[in-house]
Image (cartoon, rainbow, N blue to C red; front, side, top):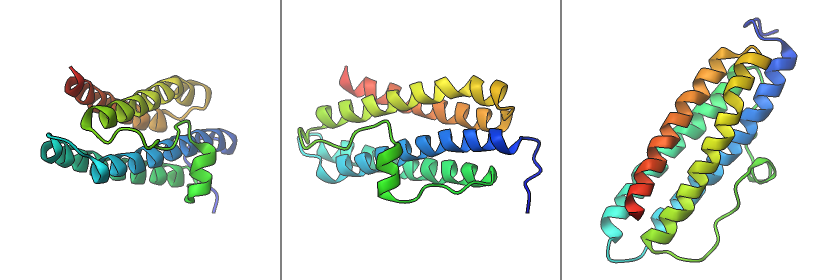
Length: 157
């Protein structure tokens, strides 16, 4: 059945492709946050371990919401690790530093990278591709990542 939501098929395809990249970034970040949670060591283990648990749960919700937005545009979300690694802007977790400071720095860098990617698409989605809904959706995601980045930065001061 043809999608009649006021956005051309061509524009939906472009937006869905950019969202697929965002989904890959979000899934890689989710995995890296799990790694930080599972492998954390140090004197502040308990409190940071619990904080990382909050982050990975929030990240899982973000992953699901991005995949569902792709489906709302009548496209299929990539759903294999191979696809995610091909699409992501992020790098896989290196094995250095399981202390909280090292893990927080890694996660902060990834959140900031996602913020930049999202910011670069907000106006393009709304203006060039006539998709105000997805523009608004990713603006909300950006605000979520900005808050997380602020909190991660606060741990490093």
